Amino acid sequence: MNAVKYRRAVKSDVLAMARIRALSWGTEGYWQTRIAAYMDGELHPQLALMPRVNFVAIEGDSVVGLIAGHLTTRHACDGELEWIDVIAEKRGSGVASELLRHLARWFVEKKAPRICVDVDPGNTVARRFYVRNGAEELKPHWLVWNDIGTILGKQ
Image (tube, rainbow, N blue to C red; front, top):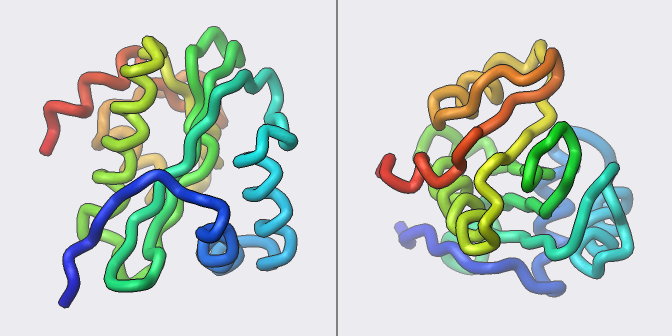
């Protein structure tokens, strides 16, 4: 069994990232276009600012998870977690938490402590994950970390 490694995503990761996103919703083609445009700064979520970042979790030669985020002014936040996804076989293994810590470090480096995430109120698994990692209710579809840096102490 290979150890999971984490790094910033590069353009050659887009296809694997799209495959993972398409397992939950949409098609690989949709996600390829969307992820590539997000990475290139051509896709702009509402009130998104530059810069933005994508990280991947890799086991062996395979991408097993991803996370993306950007700076923003949306909901009086400094940043937004755009996407996080982990293949089913790796859920519950700590991969998502480690991806979140990588994104948190990036936000801290950017001096962006207040981070929002849009999550369906019916998605109890995702909501529990975010709350377990320090997020609080902001609005019905939104959770917030008032200081994302606090999760860096949780290992």
